[in-house]
Image 1 (cartoon, rainbow, N blue to C red):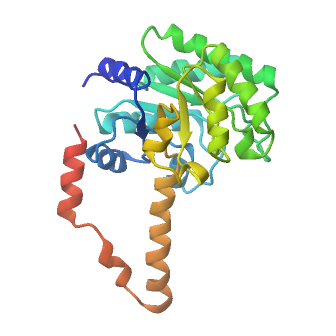
Image 2: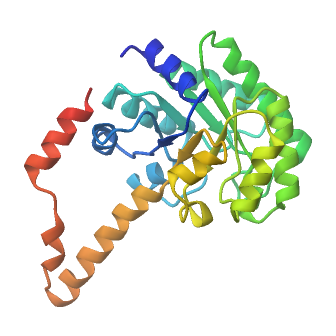
Length: 275
């Protein structure tokens, strides 16, 4: 599948139905997810940071994120969206430049947050946040091909504003031209229903908390177009490292290794996922 085909495919996925978009952290995890049937992939800033031995939130540079995205794009023939935090800059022109570079890297879309990358995760003021998304939208349109620009309102997740403010923001982001909107960590199904009633563009839901306790079918029934996993699969992998290594190093117990996949199984998935 050519890059042009991938971009068209990603845009099409947002027009009907609901799909799960997992977030790999390297070429191997990308190929395994593709082999298991993923329709599209997305990078995860947190999962990427973990591979570099760094904590989440603002520890990865734009050049590193772009290089990482290129590796994920090259690993499979699936469309890939970039998790580019706040766009690697406060000013609208910084965000626009990031979108331009994301397009050049071959990404089929990108997510931009309304959170400043400093301690406490303060949100940009609403008008500043809207201006940043408007600049991102203009840069995305200038690419001259399908590019799904996702606008994130992260204040509910970060505790910096409430659901009412989040809804006002995503409505404004949609009016500014965002192709998809996203309020991470919705508190309950009622909040999802409020979100779906408030906007007219595709909605992304993160499979954590109340949304993790639902099923794809139940989330899709609300009208959601896309379900992302964020860094959750990477965190499950890190939990496996913790849970296997602790008894091994503390008491010499190797029983946790019994669940390891065989080399043949992994090789087969990596080959299948390469496309």
